[in-house]
Image 1: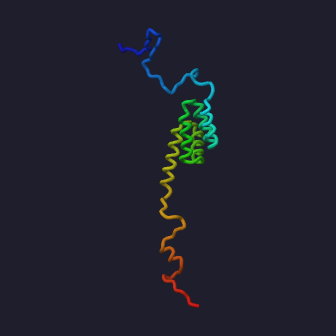
Image 2: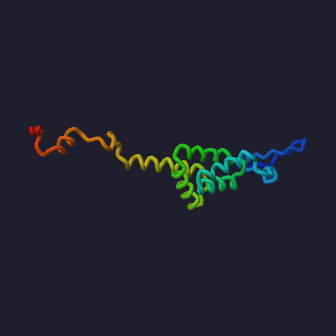
Image 3: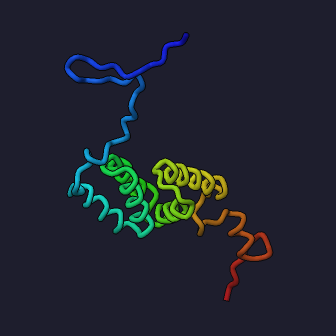
Length: 150
């Protein structure tokens, strides 16, 4: 007959489960009653960056609590890297889909940047620059320009 793993109890009253408990789960009684001031400052910065960014960071905070601080910091880092408008659009897309994951927004931004780089051809010269043959063709229909004496 197969043994079934059960909780062990030691003489001091300590009990150990054979299954690992998920580290991301914190019991409600262990959570702080008030939000730490540093987290409030981060959320305020997120709201200043954009409305969708602020709403997205609020969703992260509501779902993960204090453990979401690193993800909120990551969102603020993405706004520095990609710009507020682009991140705001990505957060709006995530909220529209009902996803409140930092990884989703990061991948969304990376892929949109890669798609934009693939679509736009690389420009080797500035927009106002014309080649020598284009300048010569624009001067006159003839190849040589002669000076008129008055």
